[in-house]
Image (cartoon, rainbow, N blue to C red):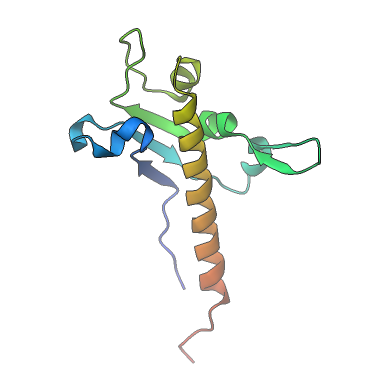
Length: 122
């Protein structure tokens, strides 16, 4: 089975009711989905040796473009680095990192599920 799952995605965060704004005013995030090769760079380990995904690293590595976001100084925030250096957006960073991680895992799960299905063609 051939899957057409794109490496890139777009996302409208719900942070500060962004998802309720008119479409042209919403913050939009274009991102690259996490690949196996990227995974090691996005994980850190807790004191109990549990794996913790690092939202800052995910945003830094995966966010490609940000639309309709202005910093407190009125400057447009269009890059991951600008977002990570902005004041008052830690909740947005967490939401974006979680979304990208979840979306990438769901994509991986879908690929595995489709590989496990028996073929209907004999």
